[in-house]
Amino acid sequence: MKIAEQKKALATAVAAARKAGQLIRQNHRRVKTVNSETQHDIKLELDVRCQKLIEKIVLKALPESAILGEEDSSGAANAELRWVIDPIDGTVNFSYGIPHVSVSIALQRRVHISAKSSAASEVVYETIVGVVYDPFCDEMWTAIRGQAAKLNGIPIRVSQRNKLDNAIISMGFAKSKETVEKTLPYFVRVVPRVRKMRIMGSAALALVYVASGRFDAYVEGGISLWDIAAGGLILECAGGEFWHEPNGKEFGYRILASNGLLRKPLERLA
Ligand code: LIP
Image (cartoon, rainbow, N blue to C red; front, side, top):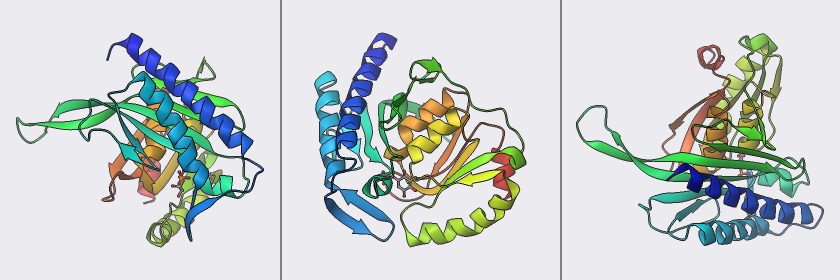
């Protein structure tokens, strides 16, 4: 995909994020229709409405592309291009009226990478365009792979803090009892070693806060690709490190994102 097409795709994703953001703001103080809920998670009817709105805009621009979203997926499983969408990242926050949520939209392309062990090549998806929008602060983070990440059009960089004791670390506890129980002992070890710990409830915002130098690292054990694809690219394009590995669940990951200076000290506490 040529750079000019990537810039067009970025403009499309920004327009779609703004539209979904408007719908989120309009419904902020209204009664929310709950589609389903578990102890650590809530799914709203508005999540579905926002995703449909985003799909309409991005598929009009790239009709051949596939959709991989938190609410629904469509199109060819081996499509050359796919949009990875989380229409409301931080749905539990939104359900409780907490204005800390984001719209996360990433465009990925299918690439062949040579497998380490043999001459065979592996097919993976690589994020090339990323947008994270905070509709309440009107903050739009954007990135195109290989170019500088931006916040409202201004280039951003990660912090240079390399000591835990003056770092602000963000953590997420995900949605399952299992991940909560697994994460707690690590949380207890990290809190006394850092300046502050923040648990904010939106993975995409945590990633772009690290990219902007507001946080120095973000850790979560049970997160999904749609929560992290866009924010991960923005972090890398701001000079940070987007360490993540599959956690065995479909599109599931564990993540240790940082300014690139704090992964090792945080890993030592694992
Ligand atoms: C949320 C993430 C958050 C995580 C929650 C949930 P959602 O995404 O942003 O970091 O702790 O469990 O996954 O469900 O609001 O899109």
